[in-house]
Length: 448
Image (cartoon, rainbow, N blue to C red; front, side, top):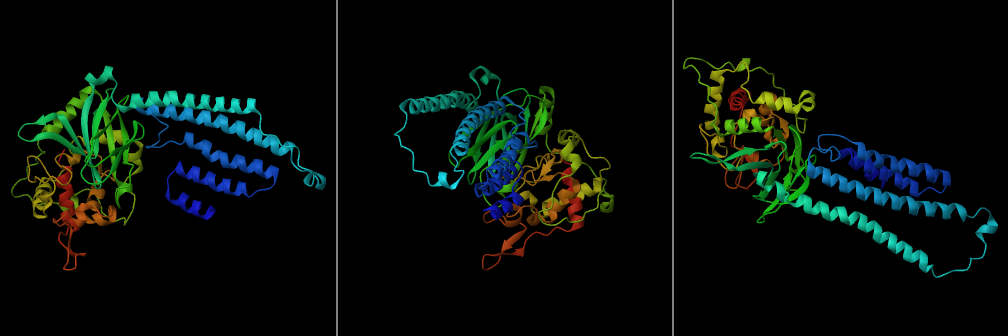
């Protein structure tokens, strides 16, 4: 058992590691016969479980930033304290009985069995009453929490903002029903949900393929996206900020890297962001006689290999600041290289699946790239949207995200690879070399 838990600890994140480590200590504790060893191992086993509540991180459920998450965390603590009190009482009685009636010599071991009773009605009724009382203590806030978190409170519904989140394998599409673009339709964004801070947001949950689960740990609990069934949740960010989201239901080989972000803005900044997003793609005009300067693209690309991390410490330390910076054009743009990238975007058939409003492309099966340069993440929230990472994603998508549709294709539409006569994906359909990737990076990052 211990070996299996050690293996799990190596692959699952904290706080699950702490819990599994506690289980491993507990397995050793069970095999102990010494009373002192029993007590020591009990403390060691409980310590990691107690530390779980203090673990922090971008997806910590203990660092709440909105009323829904606070309500759910409060309910967790109520349940925790009630069960902890029960544990202490039961463990205390068990410890007392163990110490009090422990056989201390051979005579005690062979002593006759004391008279056996059939229970004490007063004690039994008392325990039943105490159990019911404990359940009531948990049930009351549970029912209150279910009603509160189910939908936007009636008093705030008029002020609620509505968004539709749609799950794909393996990325999220966000639609803004109240934001319509002339001759286009509903405003959409991919993998980054921008919302107004201090205002309830009702999110309609949909899926186009399998079951997904929508989860923003610091703002609200997880709710499933079910095929052919509408679902919803609501959340609210107390203040402007940057929050991590995750699909929490196994949905295929890239489920673990199906991520997204939530960016909360104050009302003025949110209105400005909506206005910018409704505009067509930014166009950078290049002089007709200007040649691309790919060698001056501002970065050196070295493929980090399969499963390599896709972010920097600087980004992790201040993701919201990075998002703000992304809203402005990059310095030292090469207009000729951007123009070359735009041409390649057509030639490589990217326009078949992707949309760039105002430019070429009207695909609906992949993320809308009209303003991809203003996003902090790519590849379904997996990589920081840096030139090096975008270059890596364009060159080696199969190494970044297993089974992604850009590599394997969608239905009868081939991706980077296409099937041979036996149906195996062995035939190259789209190839992107380093120079082409640099041009595509320059073009895509110009789309602010």
